[in-house]
Length: 308
Ligand SMILES: [Zn+2]
Ligand SMILES: [Zn+2]
Image (cartoon, rainbow, N blue to C red):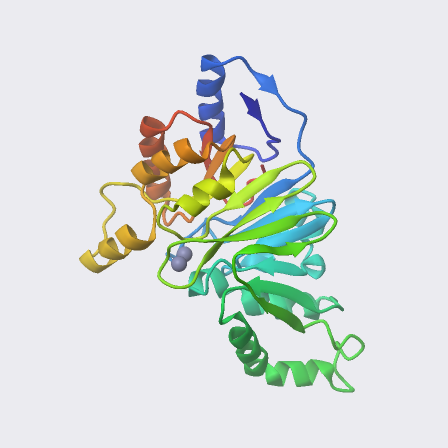
């Protein structure tokens, strides 16, 4: 059993599982990874003040790659930059993002990413990758903030010297390798949600990381992970969540419960499973208990600003 870097304080869930795992198998403590997974928002639509909207950063060699832009993304990134000393998450350095799907809980932070860092001094356009519709969403957001853009960019505007800092290169993707630079190769795979949706696999010099977005269990996710270092997957407790009939039906079709999560993880075999997209604290507790009783691998219920 090996384990990745654990930077954040108070990772009770992980430590509990670590203890269980270590008691069952000889320990092999690995060298800390250079690549960091930073949870900026581990929430879902409920406006839980402790769990910001879905947003995750993969940080490699001082560059942050964001996955999803839930509400609060820039402030949470700055919180990580300050509290965890991860400079790559300073607002003006946020320049690349991947969107799993266009549900609002994953994209309400998009205008935040476009405009807040610009007003703080970002000079370059950003690159955003996502499903069909991301270009239109981008154009509409720019248009919605036209007055702000014109005011900041006019001869008296404080951003007049860097007029490109709010611009976006929006890329509509399909499956396969969709991005590559000296730090990462990003591969998109189809997921099963209420609209066109993708999960992403990040291959960095020292880690393989798969993130699901919102999805029903899929073979594509299992194949994308296939023994990966880290699988970040959504899940909800199998029982006793107060849902309407409509919401229950939706969850059964388009999300993943803990029994399904355990089956999927056994097939995908990640070295570390991290659960996110958690609505409430009660749900987080139930998720942990549920999964512990069904899955013997190493896992944690991620919390905002956790770093793995
Ligand atoms: Zn969602
Ligand atoms: Zn969704």
